[in-house]
Image (cartoon, rainbow, N blue to C red; front, top):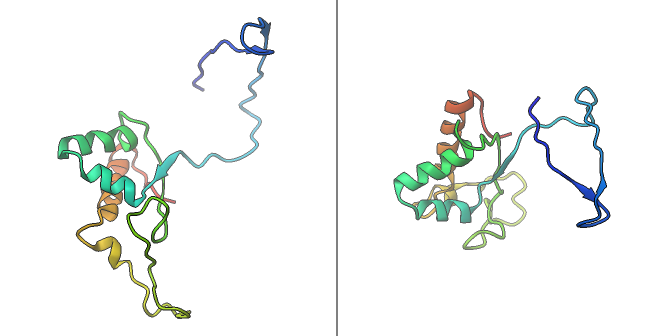
Length: 134
């Protein structure tokens, strides 16, 4: 188990009252699946604006063996509040059979989201041997 000691006081700054924490590693309340971030349109656009060398450094910082080793990534379904435009993967109203469903908007030359996800997946697999997204 890895740990770090940090001085903590109660009663506000400067109170001097000690606080004691007891960590019982054998007691588990929930399962931790991993840590990660989101592959939004904005993230993809901004990473794409960097030089290729800096893109690699950013991906390594998040997903690589010398970085944070993120193990999860959230992918919005269609547009979100971090998108340049509003879109869905099926613009046809009442198409419950999803006959017009398409992710072509994410395959367009202006979208770098799929490329960013694929690069992060490769780096995550190389550093941990695991798939990234759940």
